[in-house]
Length: 149
Image 1 (tube, rainbow, N blue to C red):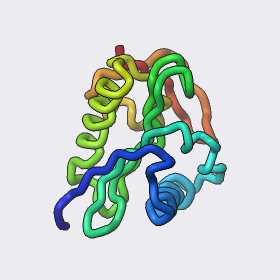
Image 2: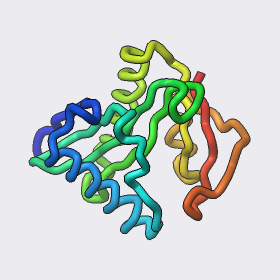
Image 3: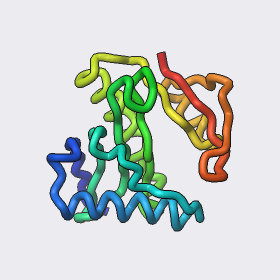
Image 4: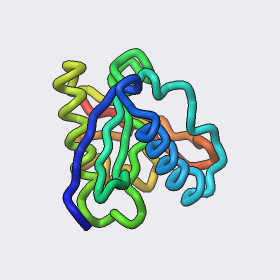
């Protein structure tokens, strides 16, 4: 695969083509791959900063981040994904490093709360996230709330 280009934009800074590509990859991963029927366009995108990696014109990694008092008291990261064909390239780790760095630089916080799919808890713990003890089903997928302080 080619070079990776990283992007960070507010919702209002996104082009129509970028919004379409973001919604498409989120549906590919969260709705089709994970066979989870839910409303991905949840009304929160307008409040988020969107971070993604492109390779050869395709989005291969993505997440959205929020300042505090939007999803949680603390800033948060959500909709974290890596395109199936781009997994094992380290893009997920680079995405998390960039998201955490962006939260620290733009929102002035190292404290971050996430809702993690249970099978990814070990991955998130590599970035200092700890299980808060709050586990739940979200769209029929086991999740655990995790906090980085």
